[in-house]
Image (cartoon, rainbow, N blue to C red; front, side, top):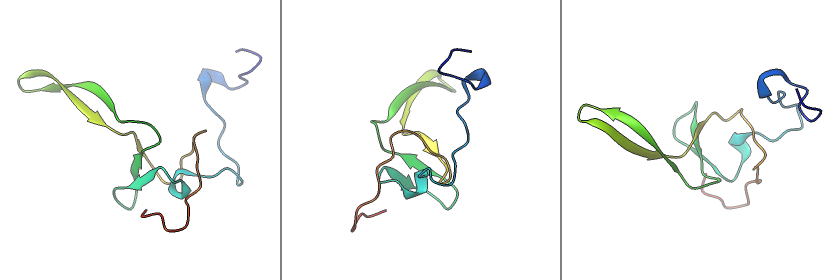
Length: 81
């Protein structure tokens, strides 16, 4: 472990009660009651297996409303989601 990471396996600590969560973020786009997509950055493309061989899919990261990251932006009045 480095002096900047006191957590084994590079695991970030759980957020405390003052850490804003994804469900409160401007970039969170809910897709159902339990999850949504993070639109803080462009979607990424990844290889996926298909019946015809290797294909590609592009998507935003799936997150739950109670997760968090360092990109949080508070929602503004009048935001759609």
